[in-house]
Amino acid sequence: MQIFKGDLIFTPTPQGFKTLKGGYIAVSKGQVEGVYQKLPALFSNFKIKNFGRRLIMPGFVDLHVHASQFYQAGVGLDQELLPWLEHYIYPLEERFADPEFAREAYARFVEELISHGTLRACIFATVHRESTALLFDLLASRGIGAYVGKVNMDCHAPPGLQEVTAVSLQETEELIKRYGGHPLVKPIITPRFAPSTTPELLAGLGSLARKYHLPVQSHLAENKAEVAWVQELFPDQPTYAHVYHHYGLLGPTPALMAHAVHLTEQEKTLLTKNSAAWLVHCPEANINLKSGMMPVRELLERGINLGLGSDIGAGHSIALYRVMVRAIQLSKIRNILEPPRAPLTTAEVFYLGTKGGGSFFGKVGSFEPGYAFDAIVVEDEALITAGFTLEERLQKFIYTGGADNIVARFVKGKRVDCGPGDCY
Ligand code: GUN
Ligand code: FE
Image (cartoon, rainbow, N blue to C red; front, side):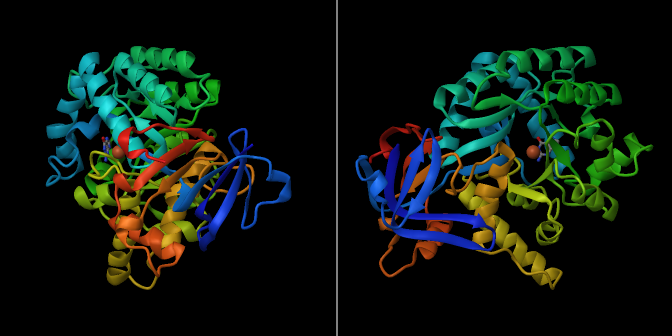
């Protein structure tokens, strides 16, 4: 049994924070037993790891991020999606054919992710098998949780990235067999998006998802030009979402769809009925590429599973707490332009970035009994804490804090080291 003490804050529901000033968390075999304002006598013999007046909160969950694109996050963001992919992203991703380049770029990405407190992530690599394997190994060696996808593309890609359909499927299956058994870092089927995959590839990936009971991740209805292109390429499918659904890539196994900015009523209905679907809100990417505004409040009202994504490098901040802020800001702009649905609250975005996204991993993202003890410890005194409630201190941290404020990280109860900032 491990006992931690500090100022605890988490969101069991999107409706509000649960806080315990000077509270205790009991953790057994990496799982939360309970949180207590007063430590039960039952636990009095155990040593307490006392973080004093520091905040202890769940680690962040990034449901959509491109590891390869961290290298040039922030570059070329005066373009829209399709030209940005062609001019900036595809030439960058071609460089990941070189495992040495990949090793260095991925190592920096992983360290940056951990330093900002993201302890679970759903990650796109590139089409390259060897460099994707390096990313699996790196993440596993660092002890954080992830789904990692070798990207599949067999059409509408530059020659350096375009795969032969059978080879794409074969290499994907090789990685599934090699990494399928790891407890924390697992494979996920990753068709890049409908325009870069033929029907044969989509069908083959759907079969792999079913055969190995694997989740799926892709992009959905991000940008208007992209949506029009999908209609042209798949005229037999009524909508973009139906393309994935038809090939078994949006259910029956769990599926993460990033963006969902331009959904039709028919798509919203399909997603509402589909408990295997998670949508990922990537507000920074949607502003940067001028894609539009996801109808987050409406999707929440419909009961669709939702989480947050940094979408590095269409998004420019890997810090999920800053993505939370952007989600609030964008929801306010939406409310100004298209009332009356209310903007998002701090508790709602914090929920999306912890328990909401964490649900894709199982019991992750909260301090309720049975949840994995994934946590960060925040030293916020330098942000001026006197006179503020725990909820206000959390608000200050997500708006004005940074990686330097995070002084300890735990995944399933195990400490994840993160260099000199790790001082307690
Ligand atoms: N759609 C297809 N590929 C990508 C990508 O790399 N980033 C984003 N934001 N959208 C995509
Ligand atoms: Fe993306």
